[in-house]
Image (cartoon, rainbow, N blue to C red; front, side, top):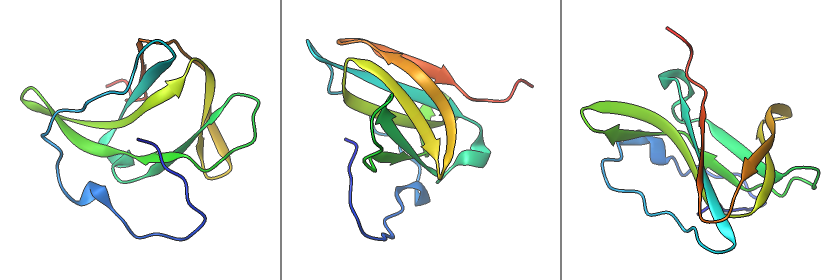
Length: 114
């Protein structure tokens, strides 16, 4: 789940690979957003906010996950109310108006073309 807090923190879930399955909280009112990134974003925290709304500090860290026989560097935001979202790195907007539909998983591919 996404979480918020007003304090500086040191939890760093990126220090290990995450081979375990991801369980998504989606349903009649909630969807999910999965963003695949390049390995260079591993460990970086990305904030999410409802498009046009005040930022509330909800964030996730890019984690290394096992997908078949390869590593994938992903952000997983679940339990998102249906609507549009913006993604932030510090003060920089990385994406705006990303649609999330109830009972569905939206996927973004931020990997560089190689």
